[in-house]
Image (cartoon, rainbow, N blue to C red):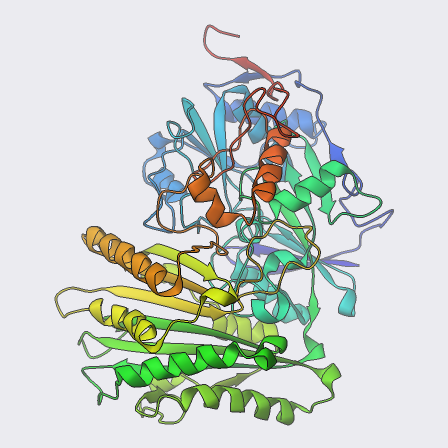
Length: 619
């Protein structure tokens, strides 16, 4: 029996469907690692002046007459609907103005859209949640070197299938499912997959860029739990159940699995569905803290001590670098520093300057260790207190010194207990979109040997937030997240996720208010330079995308994202092999090798996929 969760705007519909299983799960008619391809080109005339009609014709053809195009088409003539569909989450994204936006609802829709784009010489970008930090979820025709570009939105592909029972459960998730909807399914099924922390991120894009979060130190990133995925390539073919390399998989399967999971999101094709292995929640004792250290507030007694906060961060940094703590995968810490005029949307009496340092601690203790829940809790509590004890002058909200205000206490509970998916949903996921703001991001990670800043260096970083403090007439909002051992090393090198062994990571967001874009941009650039000066100039980008001018065809840029020239060349070769016409293009896509340039995929120029093109007066 397979359970299907269908995510709709009006709620969660649970459908139980008995499916006949043959060799594999339902829907796997193409076989593992195999593809379904239309004849090339299909006997369809694509009218580039009537894309919706062409999508209908192609969907009918590809489905053998069983289905028409079920999505929708949006163009600049649609005004507000067009703007909503193209807008990116991050302010730092380059301006994006796709010629056409195709909202798809099925794999057949996706294949039809890709064939139309190739036939009409459009570049293609793919959007699942639009949370890209550098605008890779949309496109601009001129940037792609083409006259037109198509944005394919997979947001409405929202089914989740639960397969198997107990520890063998797998989740088959369509590309448009959001993290919060996926987490709701995990809660109901008693399973867990580590993910990031923004509610509206789409599964497809998140998985391709890694999928890091506060749980990643214990369990790895979301991409580590991918069992297989379906992907539509530039010729309109769909490759189903692309899986980790084995004796029974093809070379193309192995290269796609490697490239799509970490290589450069949106460069290789349209991922339509991802199947995840899961963690059985019942195998762990789980605890989660949100401990909030008050730095300063005009409406509450000041308990801010810059040396105290600096000492606390140093204590944390020194502690988590010890061999004992590095060998212990039960803990994960995540610092967030916030400077804002409001506290998580709750005004502080109208006064500006409520600023705090939030420590998230996830502690997962395997029951196989033989500890009782109370014993595991005591170890975890000792770890949290050992960090907080270093800041004797700090006011800790909702823990040691509760503030007698139910609004604060409801947000700043000291310790939460529950299942992993419940704690992830209730304590880790956050709806940043509700602010109506957009971030300028900076992301860095460092290896162990490079992250030994002295006390003065740590103090300089902390002081940066006080330079950014808001005033009553000038609202500002900034967040910074500091992670230790953000994820586990890539265990089998079957994925291209970079810098998995790095020990320390920083993500900094300066959130743009209307009319203040220039100020936030300038502050972010200054912060980037300060961080590089204090921590070293390695500038790894474990977390995909950051503010700047990335161009993965330039050595000075791609060396930030890839660990070696061999890795970079392998990915470019795969890109050239599966997309020789560079159909899939975004602001951070990989380049295609030019004719005769060399490399496994670059020596031959293959013809573009697509049907016959028909454009008023031409054929």
